[in-house]
Image (tube, rainbow, N blue to C red):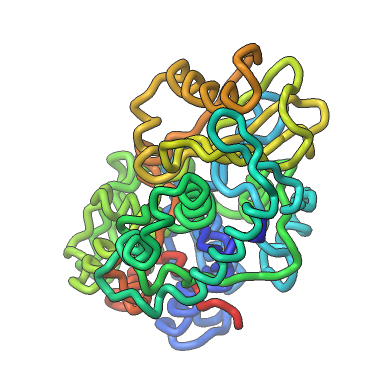
Length: 432
């Protein structure tokens, strides 16, 4: 498996996390600590962007308070350890360790990771038929070429799916191609029927191979949170920036600040979970509407003993797209745990949130039994994510939907009255 082409998680834009602090310093008339002059800044959200911004601003002498709706820091960087290892509900990989700003930060935070060998993979078609490695590699190579060139045939309001199906009708119903598009494109961007056909490849790409984090991505926010004034279980419902002092309503309490940085996920803004008074400028509202929000859900299952192949990745090409088609062999980096991690994307991911644990396990087992036989045992445990219905995110991450323009990310980042800042993590231009 080639390293993913699409790097659009919130972590790849780490350098842009300091955009709001830079704008605030500019609004103060300088960049020295004297310019802070005792001013108070409230940061809404203790995800990695909020923590990074708060840390930078505190260094500049501001009084910084972080209001976080959840009972822990990290936002979508959450690690569940109930099964004895860190199951990362959000990010799991460091996508390219060379020149990636995350690499140094991870080292400082004590994050541990192992090299993810993309060549350690086996692929199965339906009825448990092993797929020829050469045909798989050939399709991957073709996909790389298509990804590099397809935007030349797209248009602003056409989706990736529409253009792809028009150009390659023979591939649209091919199970291997459905898998590749699902696991390589939908997984890392968004719903193919909504993904931009011209901007789908916007995202920064780093070299040096991929690493899987083994002790939990939450080591990052815990490290960044050290020394910061963070108030947990404080859900912000209203931000009134009418007057010089901004009034922030949280848990029926009102606080005041000179500046506010809103770092909540795009899905929360789309859901209008926070009332802004006055309403956000039209260009920001338009950007919030136009930029897409994807859903990816993850599932970790354990067994008493392993029955699957001794490879890191196991792919399966079912008839239904985006459905439990990609398995990570957790035993390869946690040898004492017999576990597989699998995924659901886009509309099927949203559908899983209407299903019970038993129903989800049954659907996953149908795929595993097709590969390994009907006599394999049921799992002993399963833990899962439900990002679409999570009121703190309403989705997994943003992407460039059809109708999105790159200026929408600039519009989101612009200060409002030099005191209200809404941060987001735009895809960054591809490195040549």
